[in-house]
Length: 550
Image 1 (cartoon, rainbow, N blue to C red):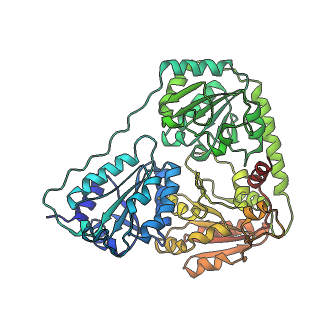
Image 2 (image 1 turned 60 degrees about the horizontal axis):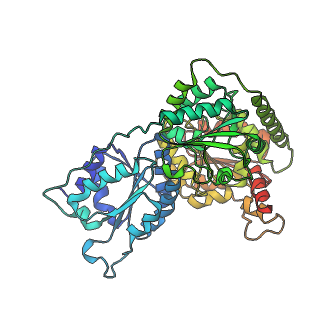
Image 3 (image 1 turned 30 degrees about the vertical axis):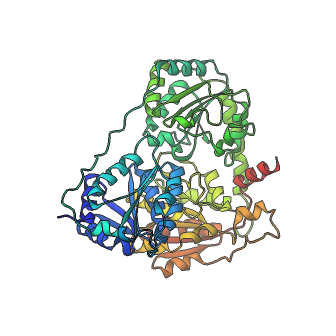
């Protein structure tokens, strides 16, 4: 008779899950032995939240569910930050937590806490598996819950005795469901095309739904056919190359000041797979004209009209919607509007302002000057994992992306520190591509022990840590000068990486950037570039400060 652990492994095979992200613990020993025996890749890390971040990043990069396995009690609570991050990222992560045996529940057993109800606020579905026979059913349901509609994490708690006990009649596993294509209505498409044709200053905002729907090609075709200006954001960055004449950059006013002018003047927005959330000022007057009209396409009906009245609300798959819009737009390319020249002028004006910063000769280096040098010598097919920090935002504001899937951010929870485990997940998803983690000295500290993970698993991720000796954003928000609880030591993080068995070096001047970057990406080992920079208020922080003054 199979044990629950054996049934767990069989279910993973049926679901085509070939990797388990984990950190070992007492509740997991039996199941991990079975996972190893089956030849499934065990990717063990140093912190349970990092485990979940790495799985989240891999799920976003591959558009497929990833699975984590952590022990109960503090292992489960540690993982909750990663689970909550995946929840706001709408990332399909199947999180599994061990726990105490069923026969000692509610009796003061070691590490006995209500794991299911702890997880419920930050998952699509949570449950405790009641018997070994039910393991296949619960895993199959978890997979489908995570991967349907607007995707998101789920959590299963599995008592240790459920893994070890045997069963004669396992319940069948519900196989992965084919995602139904939710198509838009013909009238909605007709109204959208009519509105776009009559608008004088239309704008397209493309968000992560473009990536999840694998609609990058359709988006490019649509904007080229209609000559509509497009701004990309989050996972859609690169869906239309930042160097494309119709792409006006990142749709975030905190990083692209041209957006503020453009969005204030626009009279119609077509929002594709993007929540009208905090990043878009909740659709409010700080960023948009009260008279501007909105059309929104989203797979999740609750998003439609949530923060802004809509002219047309389209609850549909964004790829099928773009197919319909392309067909309805007609075979003849639309004539570009004069508005497009104004948008390009504002874009050039903003890029010129940034370029002024890159020519700074202050010492330590200005972050913008460092990123300008890094951009010149970084590998052309580089995958970026961006963390938090004022230094980091200078890079985000100045680096173009020409292909989709090469730009990963923290997401709406703003979980600083997750950039490093995210980078590890990206390297697993793209083993043949160079991966850089761009982080600050504050952010790196959260999961610095994952340097050990990268070295043990031979993952040549390059960490670029902008070291300004403090919590830069908070220091600026407090007004600089005599800040409170914002100062850090200028630690030699390159030596820390060397201590874990990797390699690294410190960069102090611009002439050191290219040779150091070349060495890092050719080393074949985890490498930390400790970049000493001056703390300079980034455009992101300027936007935050301006918002607080209003």
